[in-house]
Image 1 (cartoon, rainbow, N blue to C red):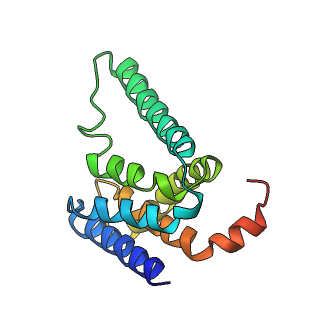
Image 2 (tube, one colour):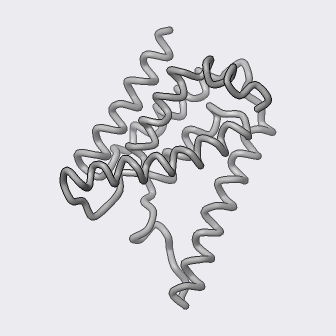
Length: 156
């Protein structure tokens, strides 16, 4: 229980820093990684980590290739499209999920991030999206309600 509460506190810190400062201090990512490993230690295996890492790599490579084709020049997605902190957050969360749940986390988390941003932008216009911060909220929801989610969708 202490690990869960500590992990939620780290995710709250990530959310706060990203929303408030549009950046997360570097030391938060190793803490997120350690918490993800600690929470899923019993189910952790290298195959799942490899699949989750491969999924994320393919998505980021696909985004790079798409933007490169669209702009007709080699695009570095870290400059202006996706921050290094966002990528580090997604990497740090990899050990927390099975492959299927990581796909759901990424997909629904990204959709919810856009919804959160649209709501926040109606209150106060913003130029950038605090992706890691909003994904931290999704992570909090997952660890808080993971038992209910696993029962709701048992086949995953």
